[in-house]
Amino acid sequence: MKYKNILFYAKLSPFKHTGVFPEQSLHWDWMQELIEKEKRQLNILNLFGYTGIASLIAASAGATVTHVDASYPAIGWGRENQKLSGLEEKPIRW
Image (cartoon, rainbow, N blue to C red; front, side, top):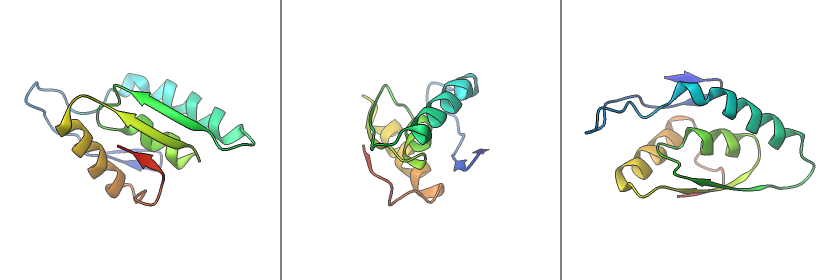
């Protein structure tokens, strides 16, 4: 799937989640706008980051991101999404 310049996999988890919550898009847009307006390097902490869409949007907007989630499979999914989006060189600490 795609949201703006972010590509991501939508697939069913063992809990039947698809890996994305589209209702969060308002937050993603708001966050992207704030990061892009800032004149300094921002460090973002994304707690409960799940499959990483918010982290990818923040990194693509220019922030350095620390992404935290207790689910090891979700972290792997986020890394896959980072690669799929062509953002491997963006500073995301998983």
